[in-house]
Length: 256
Image: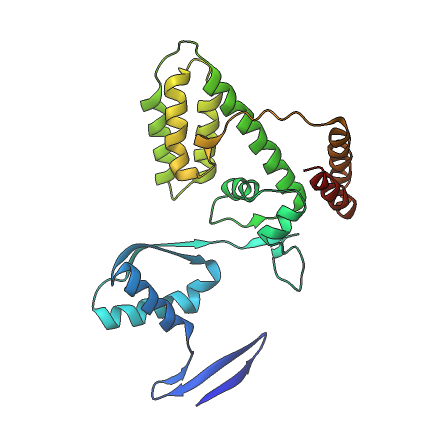
């Protein structure tokens, strides 16, 4: 029989069994879904660090009991997304959907770049200030990539040297922040031939997912009235006057 049980700090469902009190539901669901789509044994299983003590241990126990095989080779447990030092939640604030961020002038790729700057085992501290910095760096990256695509000077081929550094970073417990450092080393290495450099950067991007291949210069000639609206909106955004910035954005939309 199902019942609610009061435990200090928690309210959770429990059920009685011949072996004692059990927990319901979603552990079984995850075992069933993963075995259906990935097989009884697969390489990597991810999840939040809060899944370690109950959820993932239950998954392992029931999956391996059912199949008689080792369930997963590697477990990657991510630390929490935090806001002002605390785990983000609706009640504590700091929770934005991607649509919310788009409505105040950010792109999903800006948030992705922010995520790449922190190792998955460390808490990712979210704030609009941090997202602003990530956006600024990503826009600078776009300009750098466009410059490299337009360069034609001669240089050496350092592909093997940098590829080894990048792979070593990835193989070091998925150290993406270190891989990002190697990525920027390549971008800023003027002695590296642009022809080989851009190919290597695009190869790195199969891991990073920053849409390097599609970065290209876009020339837009804005009417003066729109230029002034854009300048006004940027001033509002810098001063965190989001409502005013949204009003200006709608006026810009009205101009097509």
